[in-house]
Amino acid sequence: AQKITQTQPGMFVQEKEAVTLDCTYDTSDQSYGLFWYKQPSSGEMIFLIYQGSYDEQNATEGRYSLNFQKARKSANLVISASQLGDSAMYFCAMREGLAAGGTSYGKLTFGQGTILTVHP
Amino acid sequence: ETGVTQSPTHLIKTRGQQVTLRCSSQSGHNTVSWYQQALGQGPQFIFQYYREEENGRGNFPPRFSGLQFPNYSSELNVNALELDDSALYLCASSSDRRRAYEQYFGPGTRLTVT
Image 1: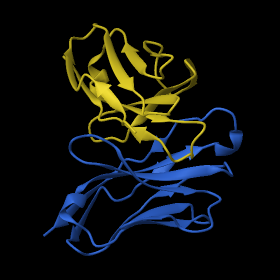
Image 2: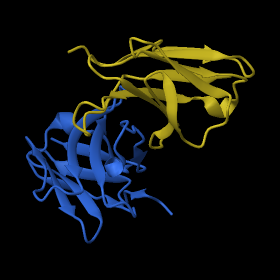
Image 3: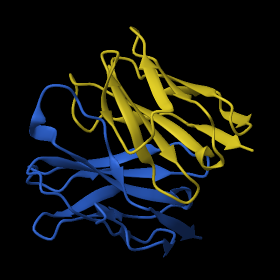
């Protein structure tokens, strides 16, 4: 079974409008983290936002917010006031086992990604 | 803080050859993870190094190996290259002394196997 599912292969949005990119996840861990990364055509993965499973508030970082619905196991990314520079591939990712303690475990499991195109 | 750097940027190798990719961690980060990203796919976890030892591995064969050095920089070695090894290889650094979300990626090395 897929651990991270992004059901939207491609999304289009008009400049200055808001857009929501969907992400659902599957884990039996109680302590986990959810990430969103942006990958422009240059290839670099740019960290956008993080949500811990025990965080009560939805994470926000500037124009990015994460709509975290734990019971539904969803972690959708909302981009407000889209800009032309937001056109890129967006990946949702999960890190499990955060409560294990000891060494940091850097394994992220990524979804298939959503290509966002912002139209002028 | 200096970011994560990788070298080389691009590389072309022939099937059967061996390749070494390099990664320098972000300042203050003591953990390095490597990922393989095939075209049109999400990155796949290869392995992680912490304090110079491998402490986590994804579903990759033993011909994928690595090293981490005392300065926390890292190498990914791939032996007996296959055509399917053609991909973007990303390294990411993080720290067990920092917040869990601080995992930052380098720009990647694009490997083409012919």
